[in-house]
Image 1 (tube, rainbow, N blue to C red):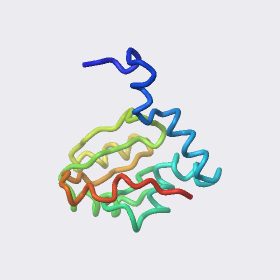
Image 2: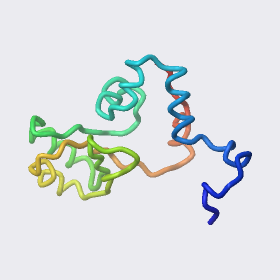
Image 3: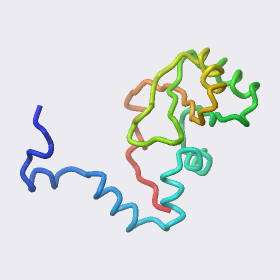
Amino acid sequence: NEIFYNRRWWSKNKFLTDGRHSDLDAAFNSAEGIEILLDKHRFLKTYAPFVRRDWLFIDNTTQEAAVHEFASKHEECIVKPISSCHGNGVRKIKTSDIMQLKQSGESFLAEEIIENSVGNLVGHFVRVAL
């Protein structure tokens, strides 16, 4: 595997790095739009009609009935801590373990696992400008 930072500048220019991604976000989105993009829960609420997977925001105010309903629909799920970024803390769990995680006091998103297929990928590469 070639290490990215060892590449020449012209080779690096073929990639959309975090810095360039942030520059594009700033150029095409309002300050409020950027805040929505950076907040997982707010993004999912704002764009719920376009998100094609089941998800549940879970914190200490989430009703147990909502957690049990989510768990009854999915055997496994992906959990994403609200307070992290770049994939830190993201993990796959059995939905039967969600209540234990909820009781830890951690705020997180639980998301349905969707197996990739060509049909699922259509539209996932479109960036929304606010």
